[in-house]
Image (cartoon, rainbow, N blue to C red; front, top):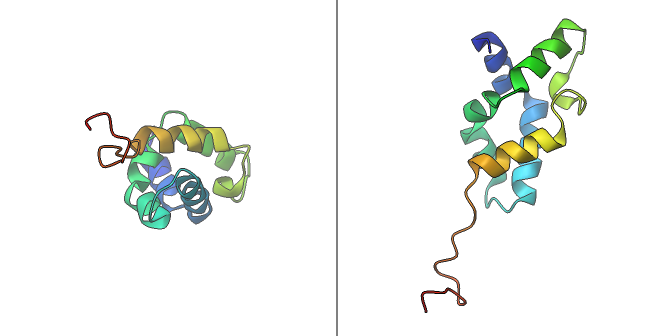
Length: 97
């Protein structure tokens, strides 16, 4: 991974919007804030830098918007890894009760 590629990923607004959409679908209460606050961890996900650098080297003008570069499955896996499951301790059906 190069830090330059990682920084380019972190600054890619189309990719950030895609991550935001995924976070929303996974129930983040403020998906835009969640995505922005995790942008550096997301940019360091395994395989993202290689895919992004390859796309740039081969003339892809908007790699963050191109689903063949960083696919939805890659985004989903990263969001699931970085976003803990919802807290169920306050649930009416909590096993503690």
